[in-house]
Length: 207
Image (cartoon, rainbow, N blue to C red; front, side, top):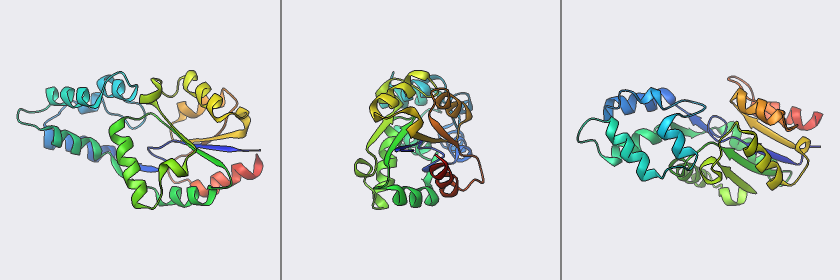
């Protein structure tokens, strides 16, 4: 029986617009090689370092400015970076509301303090306090570990405190799903066009 549900953040609870983000960096900041670092699922280089907690936001901004045209400001870089987040997925919010009180809910995300703060603010506008909605939030930059490492999923299992088969993990990246499944965690690989509520309820009924 499923006792805990772990949600990825980007692509599951938050809509991502990678194209808009890349275009913003190129047009507003002149960061022409942004695609070498920014990816929908797994970041690279100094952006990956930010998500793994190896560097701080000020280091990230400084590195972005090195790649940008002269005169670009930190505020412009911040705007470009946050343009990756394109609001909240209404279907996911409805699902979370329906699951509250029935299951322990968690977030597990490769993320950074900049996007995390933006996420919390968006949730508050929907009347959802992340500190109350989720029993715990697991962020890569705090844990100093990234999905799909085995270590980050082992950490989640220990913290949740139930058998792996009693955890349902929802993510849109196949390699993250495969890493979790290798530890006997129940998984839902959410792909474009899938109904998250229907697929989740199906998993809960059959498990």
